[in-house]
Amino acid sequence: MAHPADTERAVGLLRQYQANLTSPEEQALKTNVGKVSAILGSQLFRALLVHIVQVLVNM
Image (cartoon, rainbow, N blue to C red; front, side, top):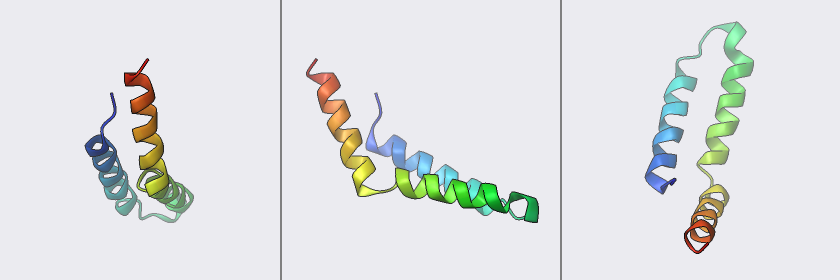
């Protein structure tokens, strides 16, 4: 089951990966990795994750 700490760790790893993308060929990937990490780090995503976990626990 996913936990907020898991999400924070994933966001941190994505941001580290993004920081290592430096070549011109990697700029599109760098932009997209940034978008994904922003989504995963958003309050909306965290709220959805908490809700989904609550629903699964109550099944």
